[in-house]
Image (tube, rainbow, N blue to C red):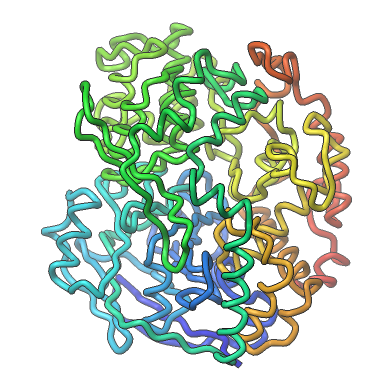
Length: 606
């Protein structure tokens, strides 16, 4: 069997060790996210400081990374989040996941804290820890350029920027211009004084059955090529999702008070296309869904970004109620350079704008910035202040929940977060399956933890939904969450998971790669997804999380949504407790959200 191997790097003493994943763990967890929670759960004890020496970072590719299969070479980071105190999982693209596999590893476990800034250089035969004093303080693009000059064109790097060094609680890890953005994974890396990991490797993949895998990859390519969903994604990426979310009233505006932006036609996909310079993609994916943009005139002339994609388009328009495309491109660029999660950054800025409107923050509190809605220049200034922890940025760098506690004056009512993680770009009152996915997600508010395609795009698998229904859709939330978990053993791109090949080919590919016949059984994959999700839940329970933390912000429960004529006007979340009762029951958990002994027995987690 091909179970994979991993390398352990201790930054405190400089020691490295290599080990093989046991067959039992490979059978039960497959790879990727499965390996992430299995090892993290066993590697750290409860109540440790996320920014202390005892926390660990696990950087993983999936079971299919680096192969000829398409859209399966993403990588992820698992750790204990400094933003939430909960389980953290953050996913990234580009080439780094494939290069980690080329070096011969399924994952890296990083532990300890270096005495001074360092970076790791990993090859197939060696692992060196180098001084990074000359890199500390540099932005992500320059850091990667320097390391490529030093280690050659066959190298790929994942690094942090000034935000991670300054321990901004939602700092990202950046590779190329893609980010493992959510949960503060870059913050943990910064706490360990680890500036970057650079991998130098030739393309080399070891598969259990390479001949069968080659035929399966060929079949996958044919299916994808004919997929309408793939063709649309290749053309647009996610740069026109805002067309749909505005039209159906779920585009959050002014800190989640409105579901449609005035004059949203100015930020539709066709308008972004006028700024487009080309497409960029991840390893072995023909979609090239990252649409690059450049500003040609105005105050942001020259701003270039391999984005913004939908979430970042929203983060720098909806929260401050701006329709300035150039400003959104400039904001996205600054976040990538500094190493900031765009979702949390945009959300925290929108939080500050509402506090300014309410008189809770004054102009003096905001370092003289005018935080009136529509003022995008102040948004750009805030991004730099957050990344460098200057002035009000030092407060917002803690995340909206902690910032609200520090501010007082009722500010907590305006922090749009769950478990400390800021909400993404879908209004929960207008897509309730998405909203309840946020509330029950093990990492906090994340659309990609169980994306409700049924509500947003009318997907009919496993069935059609009423997007305003609540407890009636508990099964849909579970289906989406468990499905994401088993697909991220691959690691399949969240978009490619909808390209008509997964149910027929993915399991067979896993078998050809790993050698376990069980992986070809869809029922086994569903069981693995359920097992992953439950073990993540157990991680959070031992950290003190409970039913009370599975809650949407109070605004969603008490304030009617305003959609400016789109569907959903006046919607609120009516029966969160009823949903949780049904969701917990369907998952085999107690009314307090604790997995039963029977459930753990079923999953082999006793």
